Amino acid sequence: MNPRADASNLSNQFLIAMPGMVDDNFAGAVVFVCEHSPRGALGLIINRPSDITVRELFERIGLDTSGIPGSLPVLQGGPVQPERGFVLHEPTGTRYASSLDIPGGLQMTTSKDVLEHMAAGSGPMRCLIALGYSGWNAGQLEEEIGQNGWLTVEADPTVLFDTPVEARFNAAMALLGFNPAMLSQTAGHA
Image 1 (spheres, rainbow, N blue to C red):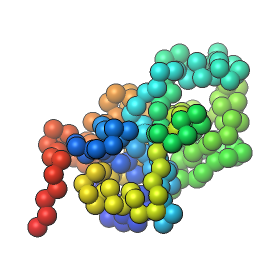
Image 2 (image 1 turned 45 degrees about the vertical axis):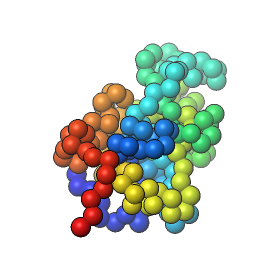
Image 3 (image 1 turned 135 degrees about the vertical axis):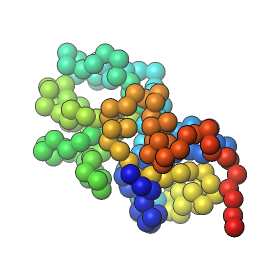
Image 4 (image 1 turned 180 degrees about the horizontal axis):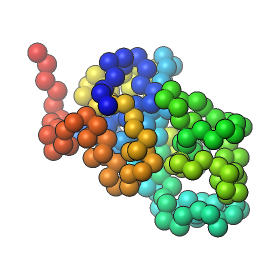
């Protein structure tokens, strides 16, 4: 997949933190951009596991865990509202109480009903769950990209749902066609 030329809408893109990222919240991060508009952007870090598993999360909120894999991690989606849950998933045909349709075909749901459906075995089969999100005010993300803070590339569901968390940075970089070791933290200008 090729990088998208239209930087005015980065929805359904991966943001890959460049070496030298000054914000510790994003050093080494890959962020899936769920929404990007003139008002700002919202995304989820996809390669930073939290200290709890999905099974433990379901237990804490009183949901059946019998069909939930034991080792699947809940991700640290970002520094904003870390107590709030976000489920990034493929559409199921069910409309949940609070879902955002993302260009490219995915959905992001913030209502508990998606978790209830997952516990009942009727929820999305391919999903990731994150606590917190990454947010940017109007123009902030574009400025960070212009200052060589992020690389962008069209998101790939294989990286999101089929790649182990610890391998997602390199897998996202591979979509650009090069090895992370080739990156420099300084931008060149002609």
